[in-house]
Image (cartoon, rainbow, N blue to C red; front, side):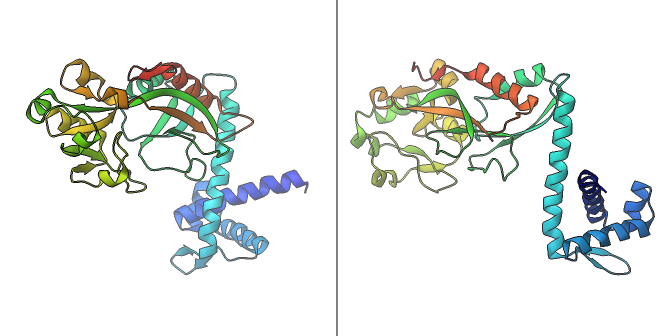
Length: 304
């Protein structure tokens, strides 16, 4: 048997092992594959002998994975997923991009809604699995194809493209300012009701302009929701520090006004990141290009 034949045989054994693990039965796997229960059992036994490890605990009624079997199963599933992805990519090369994309995005979805809807209409054969979270995911080990992140990026070896920039604004409702007055500086901000944001990953409060971190601990409402802080600010419950794209409609409608604009000029960027690869899947390539085209050079908050 040639080396290539041995590798193909090994791949077939891996697929059979995964099926046995999922079904918990040699006979059920045999029925699915058109083989006898004995043939399936012998294939698994040969694999165990080759690995020098027992993969299943056998009893008369049940098969259970050993600790070694559990570890091996996870690796086998990743191998089969890669093979499936490679087959899809080859199939896509001659036609429209298709398949599934798993994308991590910030928890606030409003900025991306029009772009995602337009992408789904343009590429109906691509299935999107969107995970909205402020958690800092590991793109590779967590199984994502790409992720959108903000701020300064560490040199992680990932590929990246800038999507857009935005300012954060201090905002309050006209009714709130009529009751409490317009703050003129950081000291005045301390006397106002403030609607703070807490970073889920670190537990720290977001830094406000004109205020040092010791001042941030002063009493005020704290949450990790953009939408809730927008709503409470509109309702006159205090001053919030929010991304400009999250309050565009409220500012245009006069429900909110921006404060201390000279001190809120800092710019933050959104980046699209993905693992470096010599052969980028067509479905990921068109997603990257489409999202960049939809958002590139947008500057939310009136910045160039």
